[in-house]
Length: 310
View 1 (cartoon, rainbow, N blue to C red):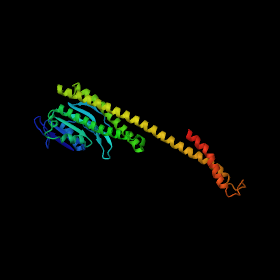
View 2 (view 1 turned 30 degrees about the vertical axis):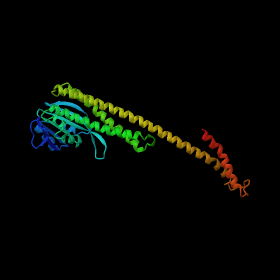
View 3 (view 1 turned 60 degrees about the vertical axis):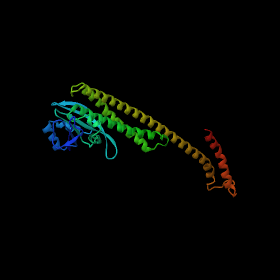
View 4 (view 1 turned 45 degrees about the vertical axis):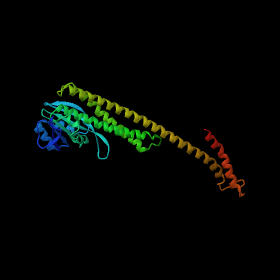
């Protein structure tokens, strides 16, 4: 699906238009083969690079081909089953357009397009200012990462408050969080390299204001990476604590079972003699069973005392 948006510097609202205008922003979501061919013939976008944007394992990078800048990055998204993943997104910057291409329907782009008309944020970019629009998209991506970080951090803290009553599902959550944060780091680190390439001015024409914004994005990304690494360390420490707690609880259970087994062993040994079908001392007396029980209890007391002392 291809949607075209347009907004000049003096416009207050981002408008969806039916026909391409110079300075438009084209949002391409899960394009068909026909749409890929259209983008290739009409706007000379490289078909192979478009298909790279649809590859779920594509890594962030910057390429320049036939005068068009291709910026690959990854953005966090939530699948229908609730799992958090990162998906590739391609930002292509041509002479008279900006195009974003992704295989997923991203909430970030939807929220980016639905900004209030009167908000200050809605007036700080236009589709005709290509460089600024690209940087605003990256800023929105960073905000999306921050939103997911806050959600994961909250979950980690909630689990950490009840470590003593940890359950298997919580351990599975920790493993899932580690996978997500690892995916985030693998996306953010190469994105920083892309920012440094853009900052060199080899790919985009930058004004001082644009350079300042890229430097801020670099700092934001570094903070996100640091947050990722901190959360990963917290998760690892909590998993170790959980493992220690579970081992300790297991040891206590084994101690209890050992005590019970030892206490049962002595009475079993004594009473088993009187279960044999042979002549035994005092077998003819009715009170013998009571004596056997008493002897069993007395014989078990030293073992009980020993375990309680230890």
